[in-house]
Length: 559
Image (tube, rainbow, N blue to C red; front, side, top):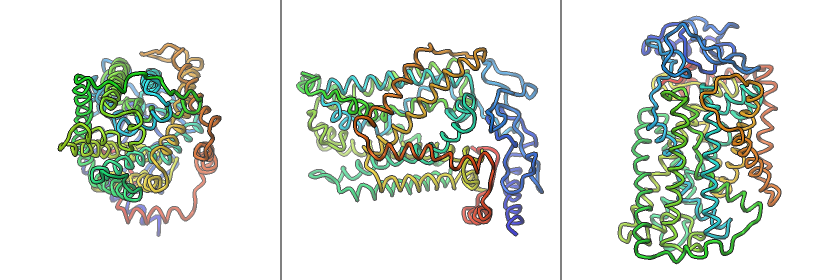
């Protein structure tokens, strides 16, 4: 009975999909990673990957291979003529829904880096970073060092991204260098911890700024901030489930508001500096704390504001002339963000003392109250819109990451399904939102930033190891962009320090939870991924959820 229902649901989707896209069978994609059995039509798939009962499955002939042993570049060359860049691979075939068109040029690449890096961090992090360093001078050193570290890490990612142009960033690099288990652990941790915690941090920032606009004499109640943050999670979830076009339109509008907030702060600080308000910038290193743990956790706070420096690697397949535009976008975008952050911090100190910055939970709102007078409401409104847009973009990307990992068989099948009419990965979006909501209720912004940074830098360091390993295991592999080998070694050493330093200086339970969670993924990898065990009743659960959410499996991301 269950098999019959699943076949009806699958074929209903296939029929709708075929009518809307008119895709031919055995379509060839570009150099994307693919599961080793071809397209995984869950529940009614034969051993060779073909779909029973309706239409033939879609077959990838690009970058991929065995999911257990990693993939090699076996791109098909007979589908279309190659583009001007050796990394662009075959051109698109007409009506090929699998192929990702290369629409991201140099300007778009820079905009993507800058737009994702400038989020809520610069409006929240300055107070926490200043508290941990103890002085203005050291906090500026950390801000600049975080920018330099992000640039060096991104340049290393540029080599990896031009070597392997498939989607997935760290997932693809770990698969190439180490094989399936480390790649699985990355997808496991990213889907269940990193992306949800990132969204929780941004939504808590949204709640804090939204409530601060109405509470001027005292700190906003924590329960109110968390309720507003939960409301933001629900609204963003609805937007992303309703329509892809709606979600992208919201992102564009809110990105413009984010830039307005940055310009307001810099312009206001410049005005105050011309008035001579530089007294807080004197004796910059007085009171500096040189503790190993404090410096490392200060880096966590600063690096959170820079997070997003590797996001361009997730869209490498869509970059025009990636061997040139990927490293160029990085070299332009990250220093630009670093300069903006330096100017914003100077602007804060023209109207607030270091102690006032430390005690303020919403630095940008305090800045607006001091400088803008009756128009002070513009600052919390702009920052609230900025953080809402950042959270929207985070969930948009997280849902796709969850979708891709599930389609590879690394998570529950239902998480790779899409709505049969709206073509949104609703189950994956709901799954991420539930975890993010739990994190909102559990943690504070500072504890979540530490938790996120600790976990993220384990994998950033792993990517550096992957680059170094492939210099020896694949010495003749095409590298259109090749970073000096000292850079990944340097980033690896700093990553090790950022992981170990806080644990030695001040161990907390969050670090243990993060490490155990990452390693605990192997408990699920061995039986369910390596040996492909299936839980009997999960087929019934999957069918039930398919009917509730009106979703069905698909082989591609529908735009």
